Length: 183
Image (cartoon, rainbow, N blue to C red; front, top):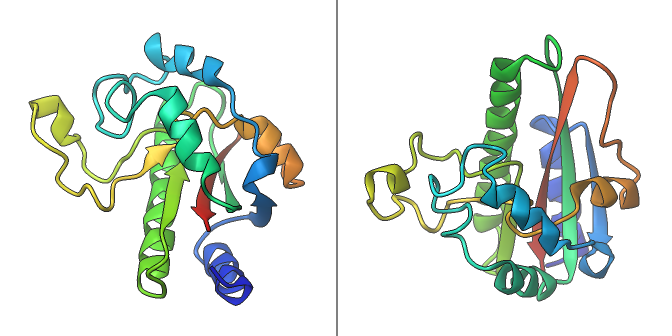
């Protein structure tokens, strides 16, 4: 993917809601397969309820290998205000907005290149609510569904630090990250 297209994508992300964007070589991403244990104990409540979440999205080893096959990570951060640490509705709404931005970025790239890329976003895919997985049906939009950074074992805090971004932006805020892996 050309540097020019990556630059245009970063500007589009900022116009559409990202607070910050950065470009990072994939080799600087830190993967930690231990994060999968959080999925298995269902910390976010999505385990087995979304095709793009564990256990259905694939094994940790396979997903890490897939991510490492890309050269560049275009990272973006969305910071949203919330009422406080117990504002679950605010956090869900912020996550929904971040996932909409992920979809916008995905559509933007698809309209401009035939090169493969991998879109990873915060939490599980929210394209369909509820996911067809809950009814035992196949994914309705397999070419558009977005897996989570966590499912791919990306250490998001270390990624943010490597990009000069803040993982914690102060009280009454929540930060969600997305990444487009490109070749």
